[in-house]
Image 1: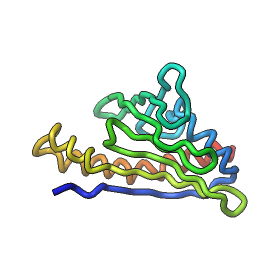
Image 2 (image 1 turned 60 degrees about the horizontal axis):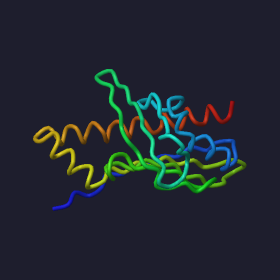
Image 3 (image 1 turned 45 degrees about the vertical axis):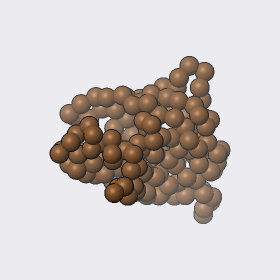
Length: 155
């Protein structure tokens, strides 16, 4: 039976225009300024924030450091920016909506069925604990990320 995707999202009101928010969040080279796990990202040579562009991210936790490969799957200035990690394993994104003199910024996370199957293959019996750890990291990290983005945009 196919596992259901795991999803989570949270939002924050930012005193900046949707275009200003998009300009920041679509610059993956700045991700280390707001992410509690991703220390840095860099585009493949000649790439930028457009659908199909690829980039590498370096993640750091107290337990380990690792790199991921991602592909931009949504790049709609002032509205949405999203990327897929690995071949469709996890989808992260930002949605922007004009609201109350600023922008309602929503960060989204989806741990896909393909990602969960990959974890079952990679971690075997420990997969449920690994999936739970990723879910917890998203639930704890999204509010931290949104608060940091708000602070950057409003300073």
